[in-house]
Image (cartoon, rainbow, N blue to C red):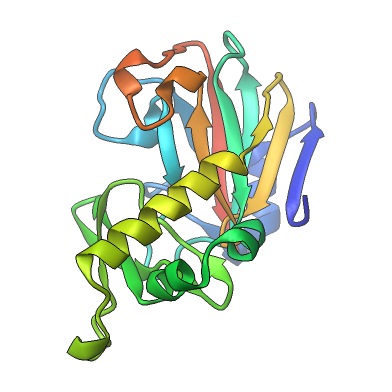
Length: 216
């Protein structure tokens, strides 16, 4: 897929890449990069390995990072896969009415000590919170606010298309995935039984370990 790199990169050096990126680097939770591995504390969904629905990273930044890099240090059981869905594919398939509704909506992320709102669609690009709420853009005149039914219909169609157009990436030690997260949403999907967000039935892999890095 365009704007996606998936390759075997056994010589990956996170500290060296930090130096190369310089001011392009965007910190994740106050660090240059994070080691994403399963932790018992469920407060941060990034530090888990069970199912985590479609989302964008770093929404607590006023301008979320453009690119996400994930590098596999330990694959663990290999059951926990990363999936991407192309925004261009979604726009091509979604109904005109639902697209118009989504353009009028904000996705508000709750976490990291606050609430952070971003337009869902802008300039054929997309950002979506993993947890929080959906609401009309605050700059809309009251008469132009979509109804609750319109919002529910549009979001249902959106998630259906995301699920139908998922591209799966299976990890092995030393592989690196880089993607433009304004053009691709991603999710963590260990097994199909978890679709719909039922994380309680989903695989947990405490041996899986990834480097997570953001940049512009």
